[in-house]
Length: 222
Image (cartoon, rainbow, N blue to C red; front, side, top):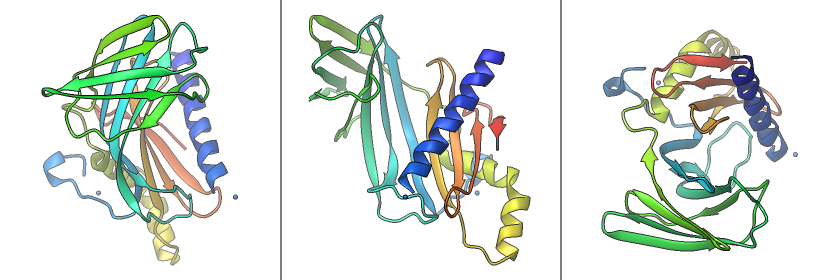
């Protein structure tokens, strides 16, 4: 338990640092309210892994150029694939073929950041599997959407708004502007996934929490 909590705290710290560098509303789904000032959100998150690779495909919306300035502007749809080698990170490139609905999409990623190979792709079908090739290593990996039957990004935002309502109401009464809202799926072990929801103000002023997408439980907040 201590190790799990440490991983979650570390993940929050890393995400807050990343946002800082870039700087230089109801739980019941049928009653959910979409929020206007959301600069990033995740609508689907497909995952799978073999002994050699872990793969995630994230679909959602985000600012074309993210700036943590309290405003959501130029928000566009995106889809991103990330391949993480589990045994080696010295590949010169990683290629993939995504399959689903009698359709396929192939590509190659030639650069890695922190051991992960990531690229933005145009995916217009629901992926069910992906074949990853790197050097002599080939893996066919089944994919599942961890958000199937789970809370949506809008649900997570509404939970966070309720938890932070006193602070947000105080700011509204003081005439402060609405905070920019940033939502991302994160994991520390690829077994447990959480919504990271951040309300971004000016400078390094953030409110943030982790929410279990299956139960709506708040795991951690600051």
